[in-house]
Length: 177
Image (cartoon, rainbow, N blue to C red; front, side, top):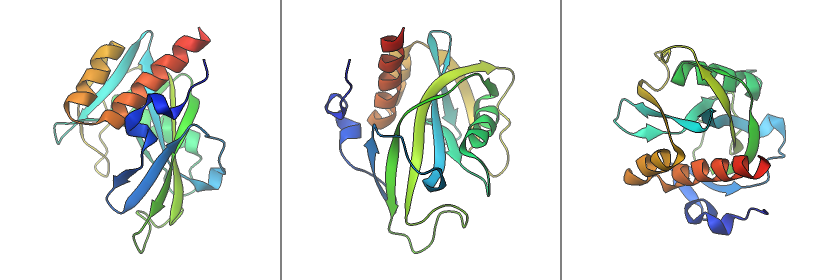
């Protein structure tokens, strides 16, 4: 099946996060130097991992690269910190191409004003509790649920963009089985 963004209304239009405007693209072949963030739709078997942070909302798993950190190393770190898991594998399927109107980057070491948030899916093995480092999001719940439940949780907090990323990951995974 050839995937198009028309199937995903929240992702097919631009999204604004504060000073950052971005658009989702199925083209994830990008210059590695432009990657500032990496995200994953994590799976355990046929189920999906979701996390809730201390503001009471479900959130996308992943985060910002540290200085001189390779994006896959950042993903391994983020998965351990946020959901207490080890990364088994990862398959990128898209990215948010971002442009910031802020005068300075979010962190001094990340690209500015143009940068990329890489998105993919992959298997994880949960081995413990989230590490919750003091400089990161504080995770209060990690659950492994069916795809329908993951989508429902994101839709009920009006995060249709994340719900569509989970749906897209599920559909891509089903296509290769």
